[in-house]
Length: 230
Image 1: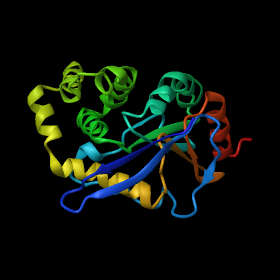
Image 2: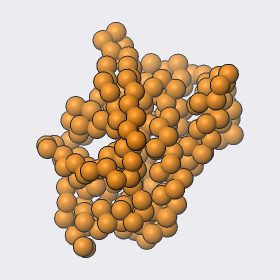
Image 3: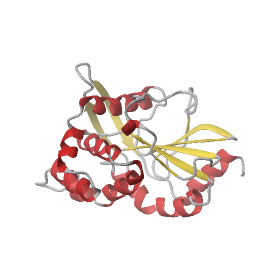
Image 4: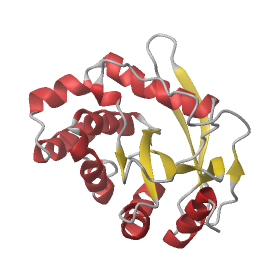
């Protein structure tokens, strides 16, 4: 079933307005990017801010790079993490067939705050932290009567972030705007309009886009096609 929501996230005084974003199931039709190579077009990030550096999992020398745009408040992203990622990690990441680069595409202010906190942690804690957020999404993002900021602060504390650092992180407007600028590039250049969205780039296939969660079997086929091993 298709679900839609309207999202408006402000970037400074100008603001960036996003229209309707769609969620897709695992049987979504594939899309091909019409222009702009993901590897040749740099995504904006302040060079002096390590928080905006690459966050990835897998061997940097893997023949296929999969870029995933996701939102930490997206139920389908959480489902992919829980249902497909463990097998993908074992079969594809740990064996050096591909790597995944994470990109933020927050669908609401809660997701944006969570993305800021995740990126502010040491890089080696990033993937375990977002995995924990996805696993507990119903508790900190959607539970009734819950203050999402306070719940995120508790999760961050467990990952080693003091409350003072947490408060300074989520109040950092330049950091917030940098994440939203990345999202704007994803929207305008790569036509990302759903979460999760994956782009497969390898020696046999450049910038092949798939919107929606994928089973481990589907994911493996897409990696093999990008690598030219099918």
